[in-house]
Each structure stands twice: as C-alpha cells, then as structure tokens.
Image (tube, rainbow, N blue to C red; front, top):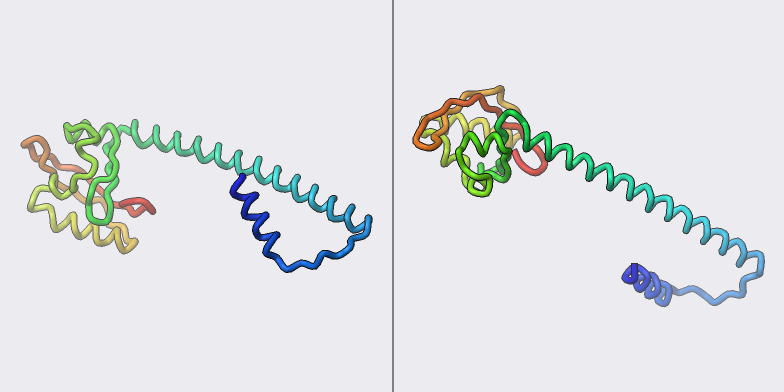
Amino acid sequence: MDDLRKKADEILRNSKTDNLELSKLELNRLFEEINIHQIELKIQNQELRERNQEIEEAKSKYFSLFNFAPLGYIVIDDKAIIRDCNIKASEIFQRRKDYIIDHTFISFVEITNMSGFYEALALAKNDQIKDKFEIMLRIANQFLYFESSINKYSNGL
C-alpha cells in the first residue's frame, strides 16, 4: 500500500493542474466523491478477497481430486517432460513422485509404441484430441499396457 501511495503522490505532483480556488460547495462535492470512491474500493477489496477464497477452495478440491483419483494421471509438457503426477501414477510407476517429475515420459514408453505416442502428442499440441489409445510402458523391467489419452490444458498436456 505504501508503494501505491508513493506512486499516487508522484503522479499528483507531476500533474499539470492549476491551483484553482474551489468553493465550499465544490469541496464538499469532491469530498463526497472521494468517500464514495473509498467505499467502492472497500467493496471491491472484499469481493476480491471472496474470489480469492473461492479460488483457494477450488485449488484444494482439484488437488484432492487429482491426487487421490483411482486412476493414474500424469501431466506432461509439450516436450513430454513429466510435470506432475498423482499418487496412483506414482504407485503404477513404482517410484516416488519426486523421481517421476522432470523425467521424460518417453523414457517409459516401449520403443514400438513411440510413434503412436508422438502422434497423439502432436494432435494434442494442435488442439486436437485423439481417441483413447493403448500404450505399452516399461516399468520396473516389466511391460504394461495402458489405455491412454492426451488432453491439452493451459499448463500442460
């Protein structure tokens, strides 16, 4: 708030307003407008706080739904780097979440399935969704088949 006050003071000092004599009526009107503006700002501030609370609650709900889902979910970027995963995915990969994150998803894809995965990835990058596809992953020296899909989101695929 202090920074905002300093900026406002600087703008006021640099503005080219004439020091006009204001009548008492004009001063009262200006004072009333300032008070109304202050009340509007308080209302806006309260609304922002309420929206922020709603956002925090939605984030918490999303976090729980994502992390405790009965299906494994992985968030990758456009280069197929794993950016997030849920608990079930961590169990499937038999690795801790912090090990999986920042690894390339390709390192888990069986070589004969890479072209299908790259095709689905390219479609998702272009805002197209490929129907579910099967993919074989190499996990802990085993090959496991999964039904997969790739969807584009603002912060990952």
